[in-house]
Length: 345
Image (cartoon, rainbow, N blue to C red; front, side, top):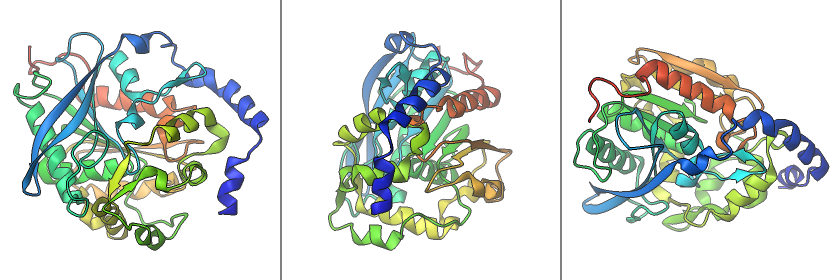
């Protein structure tokens, strides 16, 4: 634990210098444009594990909704939709959802089953299978006009982060709802972790585990590369993790699939795939990224993005545009951006 604390006590002078030199690089000039993006809170009914529940969603759009490619974003463990809508700090916008809305997409950021404002069934029943089933029902409804947004979406890109990437892979390989799949901060290739998973599993003493079970020092050391991070952003993020809880079954399945990645159902994914990892991600380092295409034998293409000087929580790093611009370019190249011939009027 002493090593983790040393991450936290890095010189503030160094951090200010890094922030000042990197902020302009990360800010895309949308200082006032974030405010013009509209956000509608919606709720999707789902029937899973024998009960009726709901999935909370936050729909970001710049102008009238509909007629654009829809990105559905899925957060990771120990988080909720906030990961995709982090605030502006010191002139740098960290909101992926608002960035993509300003660049011509509609974006639906969900709270996964059991997390945030979504329903919380028995945490020992909220497995990867149940979570993916709930995501599938949300995606299936978006293909019709009979959904909480009230528009049919003909082109959908599923964008995951960390455990949300696993949920997205599993749902894509099982239900085939999305037209394209983006995974970030997740990979199948076996590699060492900075901690013993058995210690994490041993700590799962309740059906739901608050994100703040893990200290802020652990959060920083595990999820961030400090030299390219403004710790004021991390302070904000950590202080707003109250809604972020994780079902015990989801945690167990995360490590179970991590030990046997054939369980992810990636071999059944049949749409183009983009995979992004940071080179200093303590959990999913891009040094192992080259092996990923082999895990998607039925995908028509697998594109790899190696991100530099970025840790696990990509969106919270100063140079997050390194990730966002590549996702934007890839989704546009794969699905387009504006209205297509089959989109709802």
